[in-house]
Image (cartoon, one colour):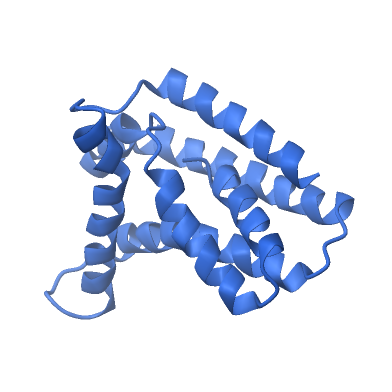
Length: 165
């Protein structure tokens, strides 16, 4: 799922509660529910992991990160939140799972203990969550196409931004 979608959901979650720690937890939990929606990036992720499509995946994530940074800036410029720290913590919580997965890929554990090994376990949980609806409820073996996934995410992001602003 686009980081921007996660950030928008995190902003809504943070705006729904008053305490920053609640916003952080709600943002983090929302990440896993949003990732259950089939969103078309499975083939790209597998290409990244196998080393076949690393440049394409890095470009995709780079563009997504820039769009997310711009979205967050626009949200805070255009919207006056009652509890801006809660909104910020909701956004951070919603982005943290993907940041941890990225850190796992950077560290590449070599032993069966330590931070890198724990991050790899988190990465497996994260990917299991991605496949939850695809493999169990939809009865498909593969994700939707990247084209449809991008269209779905763009539509979802548009709706979320309209709700925020």
